[in-house]
Amino acid sequence: MAKLTIRAENSSFYHFPHYGNHKVSIFNSSLRPQRLNLLAQKHILKLRVSCSITERQKEEAAEKQRIVKGLKLNGEVGKNGGLISISGDELGEAGNGDKEVGFEWGWPPWKNLPQRYKLIGTTSLAFVICNMDKVNLSVAIIPMSHQFGWNSSVAGLVQSSFFWGYALSQLPGGWLSKIFGGSRVLEVGVLVWSLATMLVPYLAGFMPALIFSRILVGIGEGVSPSAATDLIARTIPLEERSRAVSFVFGGLSFGSVTGLLLAPPLIQNYGWESVFYLFGFLGIAWFSGFQLVKEDRPWSFTEPMSWPPSFSRNKSLGELGTSLKDVPWKAFFRSKAVWAMIYTHFCGSWGHYTCLSWLPTYFSEELNLNLTEAAWVSVGPPLASILVTSIASQFADSLISKGVDISLDDPPSPDPLLGLHWVRKICQTIAFLSPATCMILSSLDFGLPPWEVVTILTGGLALSSFALSGLYCTHQDISPEYASILLGITNTVGAVPGIVGVPLTGYLLDSTHSWSISLFAPSIFFYLTGTIVWLAFASSKPQSFSEGD
Image 1: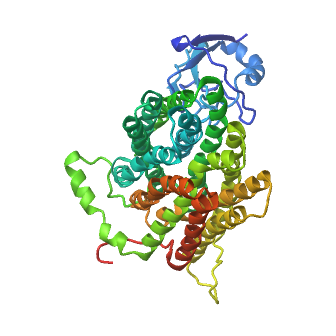
Image 2 (image 1 turned 45 degrees about the vertical axis):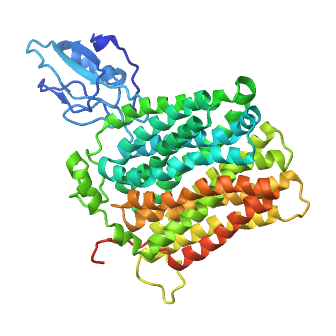
Image 3 (image 1 turned 30 degrees about the vertical axis):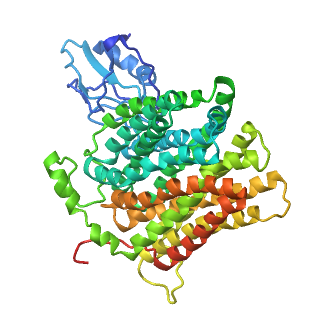
């Protein structure tokens, strides 16, 4: 009878799965040393199997059924078994032998995912927390205004201070991402904005300090889009790019939903200070967890490269100034496509930031909803955006991967990039004309009940998520190498509506007492003009941006 002795290293015992699709061969008639070629793991469970030669024939059939399936000797790797590499002992000539077999429990479940998917997933989670920290003030501003006696102009100033830091950090964030890599820049940004968020309750009574804390939040969050763009451009192939961009930036919509759902009950039960404590803590927890994911495999291991191989991340401090001078700034601003991206980003941000900051107040004051109801209906646009984002990304990537030519050329152009060019244009046009149409319907006095107005605005703002498969992919399309810097440029200008538009909306509201004039009319104007500029001048064709072009 064969005997099975179990000895666990590090006093850790693990349950391991059974795999029925692999044959088991633990005995070998040659009795030669065997070796398992398996994957490395810190925790090892070793099984020692002993048997005599005379009993082997009787027990072999039964043992094959009982031994853990998924193992195979003679140098084969159990792909699903998550096994490790060790050498067996040589069996004794007397017929008794020992052999140690190593098993690895595949935990966490995502351990065997490609590293680029892990980084994309954690980046999307960072964006969830990012918008939770962005929208918490749009809800908390209502009780804070009552407590500190702020009017709409002061409330708009407090909310806009976030965008001061956001605008200032765009170009530095893009440049640093190009030099050090998006993952490093992202983790620092999350830590900065999370700590600054937790300071808000302590500083709320002193306006300069409160504004400074919100500027720090803006700086921390401002580097994240460029960091994510750098990561996507370097690791994701073209045919997966729309989905990657949508998944990462779609985290913003999910964060808005989560923040708007959690903030009202937290404020009502624990005070407005609680949202800043809790959301800030989540960012610090993310920072700690990201260290494990980041260290799982170094950036330079085997990730695909979408930029010239001569580029190096490991630049010394003395080379940073030279690297900054090497960026072809003049070539960027000589490109009509770049200028189209800049203006389009400005137009989209005006509608997005003003609605993000003022819709809860609009629903509360104009539609006479209480704080909880206003927050719940404010969830509608970002919640619907999650669905629209997945549809838009699948639509765009499907057309691109199939090489569908949807241009108006007759006969069709043989250039495969022309289809990509028009996919981006169509997606961005949908992203602009949809909210513009819905804002026009909402601003006109049709006597619509509140819930119909909410539904119309929700649909229009949700469809604006098509921009993730339009504008937000174009930076990587035209230059993967400089994608983070290009996004830094366009996002710097795109932050201006947060600086100007948010407080201007509050000022116009105090002056005119009209939501149509203060909130909707400027957004409609920029959506329409942005569509015209995008269709006329935007391009997704790769550009070298060399100074000689």
